[in-house]
Image 1 (cartoon, helix red, strand yellow):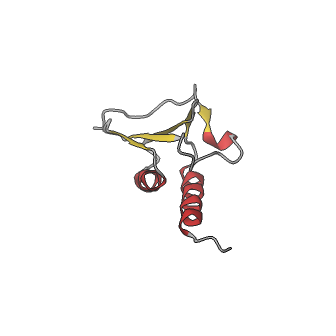
Image 2 (cartoon, one colour):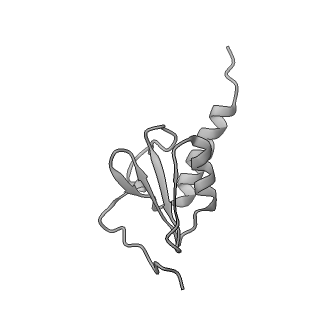
Length: 94
């Protein structure tokens, strides 16, 4: 039996309510608490990609920037952070 059956995020703002959430910014830290209570954080772009890749709907994922947001749409967060990572890896022409 998991230590936490469910996380209550009703008191937190939702990341989906922010247009163009700044996922890739260095001042945004992602924190994941899994169903067993294990806590992980991600600060770099590659760490954020990894954290969001393994996160599930049973986990609590929050973004700190400097307010605290509940990451309520993992698919959108994954897409945004992967797009940022792809832009970072693409060499600029000019």
